[in-house]
Length: 485
Image (cartoon, rainbow, N blue to C red):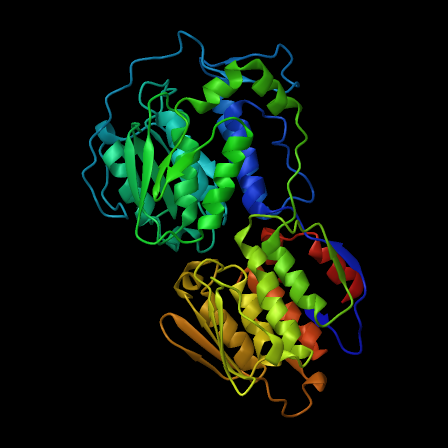
């Protein structure tokens, strides 16, 4: 699709979409507390939220047609999930699986074949990472009714199958859960019996594994813990999970890197009438998303758009875009000598004689907004270094490669190392406004937004393939493209 920004000014008001991070967590925790009234898929839902709702719908159908009972006599009402007093059944003996490889290629004979159910996950990494532990606890948890199941499979699309899951696999295996990748179908098989206890997980890959375990272990009546080893990346998103759990009466506390979910928290929340009623009657509202809001706020610097629905008091980590854009504003307004780095900032400015020589941004905890920061940088700074970029390579695309491709296609010089990306100032050559620039989407919603930013800044035509992958997080923006671009 051609995005045409020639001779155009943009002056519209737009709301940031609901925060995906909070939306996923609200849906899952409310589901575990017994509220199934928000699982219908809305026209405005992003693809990732649709995947989580679909998985929860499938999970609800299994739980409903089992020895679980529903507290409401009207199935259309808000429902409360309760374990029937006689629901516990003897767990079937699980087949031992000693294969420690991430991929399973061995053929099973008939006696080894397992009774599995299926959950479609599409390309949503959040759905997969948050819900594998939750589904395991509900359907395969020790002492729980296993509904005749030996396990389940997760269907994937796009790059999701290729993204790492080793940290979660290694954390759950000592507690009875085997996670295997099936290359032939690009699906993930989960089998075994999940036991409560003390879990240990590497925090360097994804905070969503920790969030998924905290939500899952609250299912068990026995005390559990999650010890995070290594540096915990994107700690703010674990804090969001803690906030949502606490909101529904199931707090997960932590002492340093060791987290303690509430033993039997969901059962207690349902058994306490006041808590259960507050869950079922509370308004379901999710604050605006700072990840997509960052895209809009970057665009705002080169347009007259107005951005609403962003909570300035949010705990979302991507609110850090405000700090970056503060520096952008200082430089663009010729006041760079007045800029002062904040204590514990992810930004470090190297200045000499009141002039900025280089800027360093540690992007370890903000990988989703780093592409926006990188593509607007050459129009503001002479030189900027983005570090902590290793996780950008394992997103929906290799976002380091994607960003450097976009910048190279408009003539910006970049230097890339394993964990750093240096971006230099854009120097116009021939009149770029008269050219149509090809900026591939890489099947990545963030890269579509990066291409749109470049089109707005350069006021030119940009050819973006597969622009519709923006539906993954911001489907409403397609309407703005139709009306204004």
